[in-house]
Amino acid sequence: MGAAEELAAFDALAAKRIDDDANYQWRIARRPVGNVRPEDFEFGVTEIPEPREGEVLLKTHYLGLAPVMRFYMQATARTGDVSLGIGDVIHGRGVAQIVKSRHPDWREGEIVQGQMGWQTYKVSKMTAQEKFFRMPNNGLDAALGAGVLGMTGLSAHAGLFACGSPKEGDRMVLSGAAGGVGSMVSQMAANVVGCDVVGIAGGPEKCAFIREHGCRASIDYKADDIEAMLDQLRPEGIDLYFDNVGGETLEACLERLRMHARIVLCGSISEYTREEPFKLSNYTRLRATDSVMRGFFVYNHLSDWDRVMGEMSGWIADGKLKPVQDIEQGFGAMPRALANLYYGRNVGVQCCSVRGEPEEWV
Image (cartoon, rainbow, N blue to C red; front, side):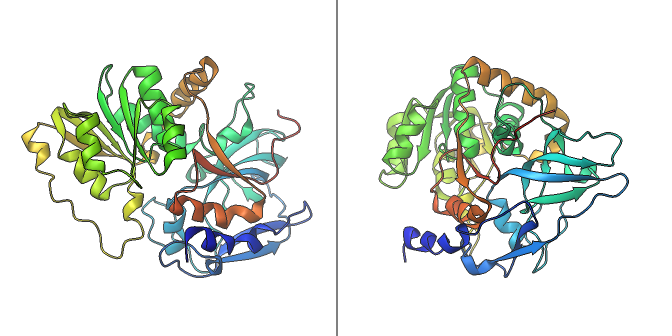
């Protein structure tokens, strides 16, 4: 069964409708094996909770999706969050409006982004562990808080600037260039720094997309010989490789490092559903070229949140960063949207519109 046929199996879930009379949830029905399937999800309905003293009631407008959510369902995520059991609401960040507040520091009507979980309402004490941030009413869509101006945006910025140390003229290669992080990294590297970016994506449409979003040239991993194309497009080698896929692509780029190159390990989605871990065979290229390979965890960069969001909002206003969010419509589409990530069907940040833009914004 191909990806299209398997995704069609999610249509019945996507058809589920929500109202404002209850709290609708997606819970873990079973641990995924390989990509997620409809049977891995349980649809639940509870009463809308009432906030107590020191709490707020949040109403969900958008939810973001990321590959790590499959690991939440498997109870194998290494994010510092409490492991989830069968029947638990799936973890995830989103954009919500405070509709009731009994908390002295948060007002009704404010738009926030943070750990909402896959549900349409939530009562919260707004703890540090939930990582809630106010969204400024600066003329940009609230939807951006579910991705481009959310944790995905912080990942792209921290990976590129704090870890990659990009320089003007860098000969750069970027894998996963059409994805949520990649579609931002390409634009920031090219339009803000002045790097020469070669992007890797799957299929002619995605390759055309990344050439319109910061990449000078593209490699189609579904049709091209990646190693041959790297030799053609990067004959002098690679100064900066931003890795979103891991596996053989990482190995191929390591073979082509210039002196003092930098490799940023952001993600390894090509490895997430393998039965056996990928074993990198040529890491010694780092020694031969005096190069640095560095991973990072986005939560370790939260102290930079206000500065990063301010910079990225400014680049959006200046036209240097064009937000790209692939938005599924309806809360019922959440399971299919997660499957999309592993089938490589999304372009930009994968999100879901639960209620759309808020009518009023304090």
